[in-house]
Figure 1 (cartoon, rainbow, N blue to C red):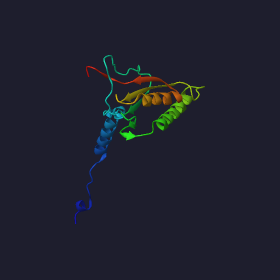
Figure 2: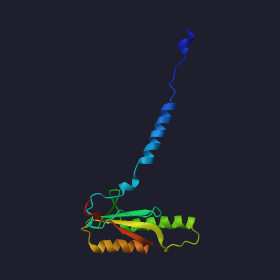
Figure 3: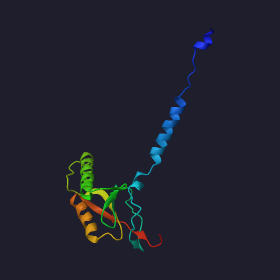
Figure 4: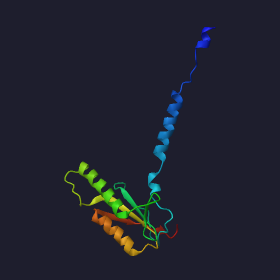
Length: 150
């Protein structure tokens, strides 16, 4: 037997693993999570003066989708609106208390609430959603509509 038959050859996996890691990082950076929060099946009201939501890049946006029966959906899942708003507000208050000394629960939260309600959503449902948001400290609202030319 020769000495060369006892040696084994193994491929160097380092470049392959490096490439896989870079691809995973790339896809994590380019995926749009906010787009998934929008319920595209809603028929928004049509207004001649509708404009895109402009927060000036300062505020966070919380999206609320209400269908024609007043059902709240997030990422395609039906959820209880009040418990969702309560949880988001609690997390926002905790974050604000860490960054801003003296911040108390019940004070105005910097997050803008974008309500995307179907044009057939009853007004009482929309009003209840706004009141619930106000109860937990949200004061800035944007009611979404479609432009006539869209």
